[in-house]
Length: 316
Image (cartoon, rainbow, N blue to C red; front, side):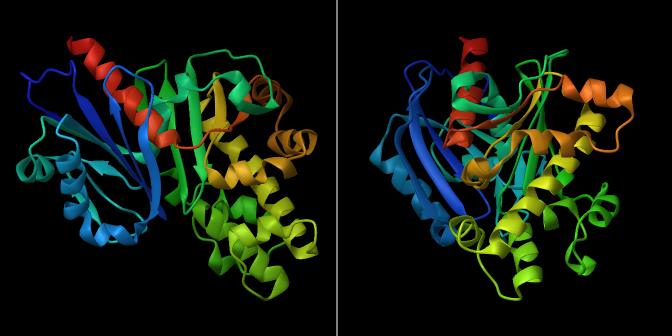
């Protein structure tokens, strides 16, 4: 984050910008509130005029003095270069170009992690209720890629790039009825919207988008088989993540793809695949971990607002 130590947050507004692999979402908010103002979603094509877009927001609302960006990519030294698109944003450059008091750059799943405490149980679908045993959670979701962050207590959020690792991918591949292994080199090649499309293409020998696959679940046997394999793979990779991070507070799935797949999740089968091939002592531990899907949109924007609200509370 880049911030002037003399900056006050009282009676000021923040612009929240979430740049994912496919869409850009924006909203403003009064610092200290929990309400998003004029939340919107657009295709990433508008990134070509990013500076003009940002200046337009600032011209329209002079009370915006703070910026929080959540971006799909690894954060290094207050800047992020996107994983799936040729775009880079740097907090110092933003402050030099625009008349604002602070600029904060977060990984997209880091933002969502900062919002985890905001999501109520009634806004979640539980695959496993579990019995929380520590203060560490893992929040993740397949979309354009696979993003994840570790949340420790409430204020420590550690983004990861585990979706771009090859961790457990070979063992997982051997469990699935897939032949073209060259298409699946890292975890997000399989556990993502693109991964679902690749699975479908292998069986049907034609291409469909993830949205088309979901929509045709009841009418297309290949869509049904692809989604079943995808959910089996997801459960097994979550099991690997669970042993690596021991998120006793829970594993929470978020994002549009997971919300669209929610109706197809057989909780008993998912939990069976989550526990498959585990020694009894490890299976007993995994059974204690809550597994849930967050049924809320604009999760990055809500998380980014909670992030700057926490900063404001610590400074006022």
